[in-house]
Structure formats: C-alpha cells, structure tokens
Image (cartoon, one colour):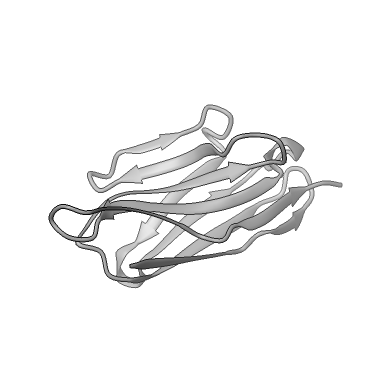
Length: 120
C-alpha cells in the first residue's frame, strides 16, 4: 500500500506563492501517474495538474502558466509550485497516485488534503 501525506498549505495573499509537497511511503509495482486535485465545498474534485510515468504533464486551463508540477524520485515526493495565486484558487488540495500494486491489481491512493486559502 501507498501512503500519501501533503504539506505546505496555508493562508496567502493574492499574487503570492505556495509550494505544496506530497510525500509517499510504501511500495508500488508500477506507477502510472501522479496528480494534484482540488475541491471546494459543494463542488466536485477537479484535476489541477498531472504527470504520467512517461513524463507527460497536463494542467487545468485555470492554472496553466501559474502552477508547476514536479517530482523527485529519490525521495518519492510530488510538488506543486503555485505562483500568482488568486482567491479562486482557494480549496483543499489533494495528492493522488495511481498505478499497479502487482502485475494485475490497480491502486488509486489519496492524501488527506491540505487547505490553501488565498485572501487579503
């Protein structure tokens, strides 16, 4: 099993920056993708950014050019650098990993979430 722990959230003024981290522990047979999602009350969880094992990167249109997703294999950590933050970026941000636990079994793991609040 994989455990994910996010950190780095907090309160920031509009135009400011935050860097989220997602530390992974446990074992995985084959990682397929890592991603950041966010959710606000009453809305569905939405994809913010994703990186695949083939290094393809996708961003939501609303964050493209402001957010950057990256990862470090050596410490199994996923990052989300968020710049030029806007009040509409306020949400709980979740880390997500997807892959295979062995040659046949699929896994979909989530962190507990970290709150990001953009407000003056």
